[in-house]
Amino acid sequence: MNTLLLLVAIVDEHKALLLERFRVIEATTPAARAAAIAAHADEIELVLTNGATGFTAAEIAALPNLKLLAAQGAGYENLDLAAARARGILVSNGAGTNDDCVADHAMTLLLASIRALPQQGAALRAGVWRDALPLYPHFAGRRLGVLGFGAIGRKISQRAAAFGMAIGYHNRRPREDAGDARYFDSAVALAGWADDLVVATPGGAATRHIVNADVLQALGRGGHVVNIARGSCVDTAALAAALAAGRIGGAALDVYESEPRPPEALLGFDNVILTPHVAGWSPQAIRATVENFIANVDCWQRGEPLRTPL
Image (cartoon, rainbow, N blue to C red; front, side):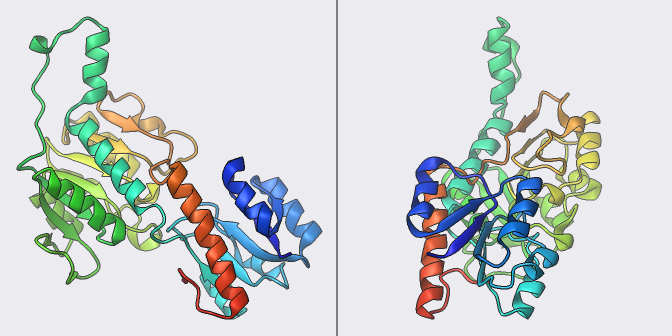
């Protein structure tokens, strides 16, 4: 039975799938992680982490029998791929396992922000009826800019198109499978065209603060920003300044630079919606990530290419 170092918290229902197949060493805190590596370095063959939790070059070097390093979800920004590849260690992620869940959550946030659902609910509880409230726009005819047009970005665009929104996108390069979506060569150009902006790009140094003061200025007073990518993609200080000055209409964020702590600079705004990095979390999605990890292990054991290699 292979020994698995599990660095992410998983509910018992899904953990049972791992326990059936592996000897599992759970280490979901930094102290437990260091202790587990020190005590079981020679035994650990598999590591399951995620993009935010990561796995460092030093930790890879400490595990002489490590064969497979896996990110549970699609993100892998804090996994040291170069160190793993230098050792011949296979690396995988959970690409495709939670795309629908993330896209659903993005649309939920966008709807709630544009239609001001939290504000309207608060007004109702305070005894304010609709006649005293402003009118909020509907989706049809609005322009949605999708920043990052990978699998999740495309699923978001499909859902938005079903609401009658026009779609634009910015990506490292134009995509042949973009359909009617319009390509823009920069985030600023996309924001200048769009009414609303959804951030769906990978994290990492290349996309840090890709949504900055210039992008927010280009988006404009009625625009709404949704981030289901990585907290580093949005400049929190610039977003707070734009909200305070009324330069954008609202923001709905599932991820932030300060996580797991809430973004203090944004907590005072009633037109900011926050969720705790759960866009990719549903019973179906989490089970799919665990099943995908097991499938990758099976591929390794059979000497076959991984299902979702990095």
